[in-house]
Image (cartoon, rainbow, N blue to C red; front, side, top):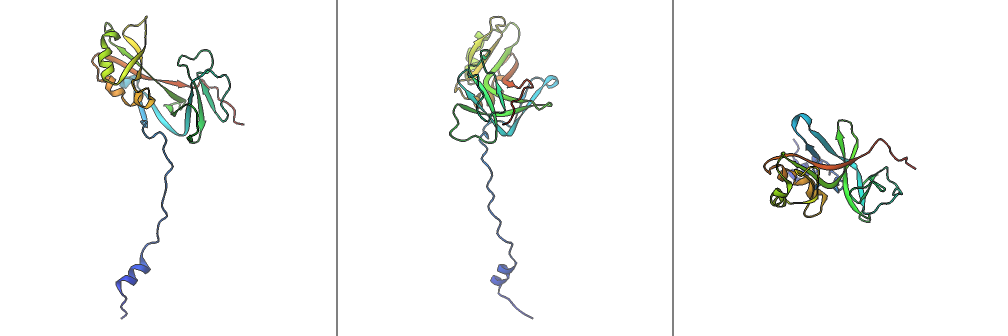
Length: 196
């Protein structure tokens, strides 16, 4: 019978070293994977789509940024003051403008870009002006009141960050007499730009 020292046995029969696996950075990890809005019967679900990002240009450019596969809200009809361009791949630090993830709306898979605005509607008879304090405590501010619907308004996060506007929606939902909350998501209208 042969005897081998334990050290030798462990060296010979140990598993080979596994190469270190480095995961690609998730530039938008602070954004939720899914955003679900609306009541159960009429709920809409948005899913964050990896491999795409959007740049929010603070201008009314009529030309599409090089490499963009989609441009949203461009031109004179923009209500947000931004033009949104969707790109494939991952963003880099030299990108100019605000960056955000791209979502798909379920079930049709259309691309959607969050603008940072959130629509809120209270029950009939509840004026948004009477709810300013509750809205501020939730971390939002009123951007635009609607003359034709005093119980509804457009909000943005007090920080001005898109991620905060999306992440704090549950705090808005906790305000009494809120009937509907929905983040503004710009979507394609079936016109995609050709790749060059």
